[in-house]
Image (cartoon, rainbow, N blue to C red):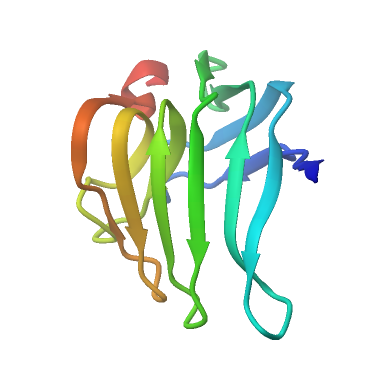
Length: 141
């Protein structure tokens, strides 16, 4: 059974992802998720996410905005230590903290065929098999 996710709007302070404060909110949100496997205690282990999602990312200092289509599809393995492994196809929106992964601090639309490892501490490793990385901070600077 699939369930709508319902992505809420969010705000990020200057310096956390971009040099300026950012507001993001879905303008199209048809993403659904389906639990494919659970742990013996019933908690989710493997989840599939898919569906149309367009997010408007706005520099709240200047009002500059960009609508990014992040309608990718992926499988997310939720590990018991709090880490995650994503196997994805198509675009998703991913943020990286300063010294928090294999990309510089920022917000990115990652598109293609790739995996994303998120450690229990939040460090993000992005091995690209094939695809593109679009720097959203640069688009709305």
